[in-house]
Length: 247
Image (cartoon, rainbow, N blue to C red):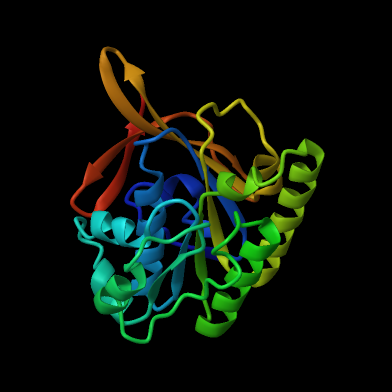
């Protein structure tokens, strides 16, 4: 079964949407639209009744909520309906953050942080927290921001590769359609998560013909007919819009 992303122009280039219950990687440089892509995907699902969970390991959830509220995605109403959830699983939290989140999201919303406060999040720790959320809230769409935050918790390269492979294999068993956000800036610099994911979507932000240009490129999409050409990306009031081929 395919599920719609809600991103105008994207589903048409991947045969109607993403295959459900698979793991995808959205990667690219800063400012390319990765966060907007993922929140748009979650918000669209939430509007259709699918609970979405955005797990952040780097940025404050409140900052993401504030930024995404500038779009016509109904982020705040969906949060209040508990159809769109945000969880901070990073290594530290700002003073007073929980009080602010409880007031702006919902009085019942809680984040378990006991095991994550004093150390960098390992793949096993992050997976355990995510699995608990999925079970409690019946999460159908999941975003993890970002995979690099757990990839580099050990200096042993061979252990990094082993743990990342194990992490993604376990994510596939959760029954969610999952998007991992990556920080790679070169689509030809292959990583473990690119090989392990069912699909790889690369967001570009580069100087082209004297202008900064954003584009999307489907590097890999198992079970889906697609090309690998770049298409231009525009930011609209509703979020991202995929347009024609980059000329």
